Image (cartoon, rainbow, N blue to C red; front, side, top):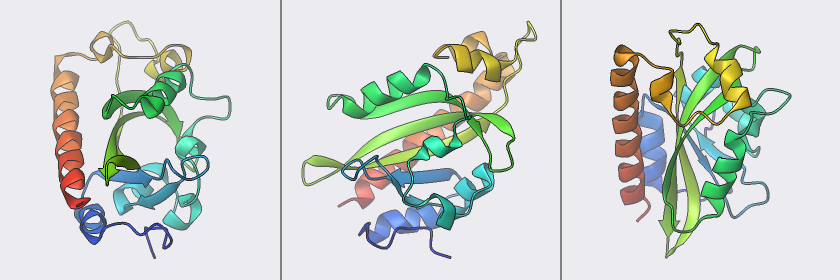
Amino acid sequence: MSYFDETSDLPSGLKGLFLRSKVSLSIADPNREDCPLVGVNEPFCDLSGYGADEVLGHNCRFLQPSDGAGPVRARMRRFLSDDTVTDGKFLIPNCTKQGDRFLNLVYMAKLEHQGRVSLILGSQFGVRIHSSQGTDAYELALKEDLRQLKTLADQRDWTVLGSYDALASSHSMIARLRME
């Protein structure tokens, strides 16, 4: 099974990073119509329930619930269109192929080649956050852009979220190096 769009011409170092990583990774091409996925790894397929052959060539919004993912989408669009910002973090409601709901903590990094953004790296982490008020974090994320994860996470969850941040940052740094 290929985890990469054969027409994408991804650097071999980047492909190697994807194949070795235990973190769910995706790569999209912002220069193609609708910014389709051109690479995913096995942990991405495990998290989403989809096979690579089902997702390559599609925009990652297929993971969103049928009625959309709420207001976070507008911030994601602004990130993608803002040339001054290279990294972004988003908590977005998603669904697996089987229909199971989860919050997806997505870190996006713009990867440049020859001075222009040529790829978008996504690191995804399925997150379960339980609020002390009993609020369903998934439903809340459909209604508002959850930038303040602290309002939903207790101290134990914050430690885990810090680990996600470190993992995503290290993957984006390595990916940027592998673009050369």
